[in-house]
Length: 215
Image 1 (cartoon, helix red, strand yellow):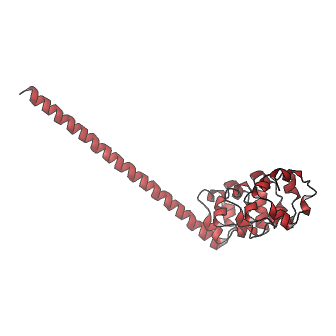
Image 2: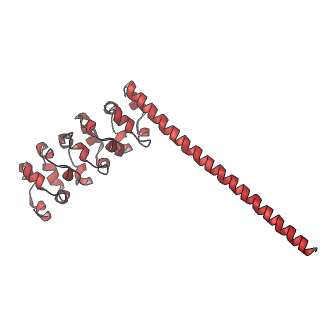
Image 3: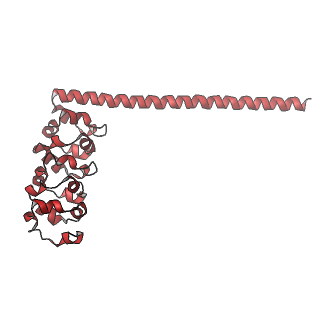
C-alpha cells in the first residue's frame, strides 16, 4: 500500500481493520495517519501494533490518544516507546498508565525521560505506585518535581531509597565543586608563579642592561 493511500480511508473504516491489516502498515505510513484515524483505533487494534509501528508515532499522534487507548497498550508494548517519545505523553496519559498498572512496564530509561512537568502532574497516590527501582532511577533534575507532600506518600522503604539518592547527588555535586575549586586554586598558583617568574626575568634583564651601561 502506498503512503498516499493511507489518506483515503474514512474514520468509520478504521475500527474494521484486521490484525493483519494493522500490522501491514509501514512505519512511514503510520506517521501519515491523520488524527481522525488515531481517534478511530479501538482497544484490540492498539494491542496489534508492533514495536516499529509504535516507535513511529509522532508527537501529535501520541498526544491525541485517549486515556482508554493508552491503557490498551500491553505491558509488552510500553517499553517500545522511545525516550524521545516519552516526553510527548500528557499528564493524563501518564496517570492512565499508572491507574492501569502499566507504569510498572516503563523501563529505567523511560522513567528518566519523564519531564519535571509530567512528574509534577502526578498525585500523591500515583507517586506512591512507582516501584523501588523506578524511584532509584530518578535523575537529579526530576527529584525537585516531587513535593514534600508527595514524598510523604511514599512507603518508608521508598523514602529511604529517595533519601539515599538525594545524598548521592549532593555528594556528586560537592565532589564536582571541590574539583572545580582545586582546579581554580592550581590555576591561581600557576598564575602567581608565572607572575613572579616574569618579574624575575625583568629584574635580570634590568641588571644586565645596568651592567652593560656601566661597563
